Length: 194
Image 1 (cartoon, rainbow, N blue to C red):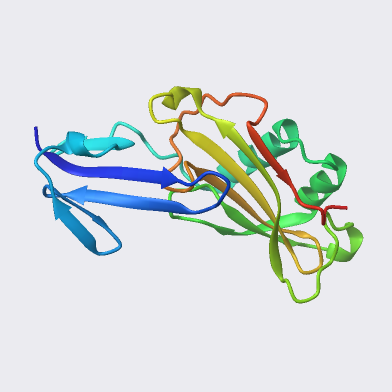
Image 2: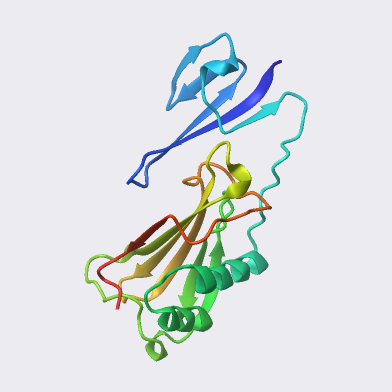
């Protein structure tokens, strides 16, 4: 069997570092280095796509409807310490950017930021920082250990600025169908949250 492409993702525990490796034409490469191999079984992969076939995992589209889904999901399933403040941020926000890389991330701009209390302490000199993360196992991907990572970022004033929704450390586009396990297996809460 000949493979047209193989996507390999390595996520390093306790860090946000991901390494993506791609295979094509019987060679694999990491940051410009490559080596030949005789069989695709010499590497561990998350997904294989046979030559001439379609990938069976349809990526979840990133659009305003999907962003609204994630806002509801975050408010219902993420253990954010002050949900009312987070809900007020979402209610006052406009989506100003939808990422197109295969994740479901989006950026926000508050319509009237003075009317909504910040979710984090204001920081001078640090205009953009992660203030919260919740990671959920995807039971539909037990063989490869898939997960959804939800990260919230605040701007310098402490208001919500970005919502990052990644799959497997953003190494794979988010699949259309998810079967997430609750509660989240990993939660990070910044000391700067109010």
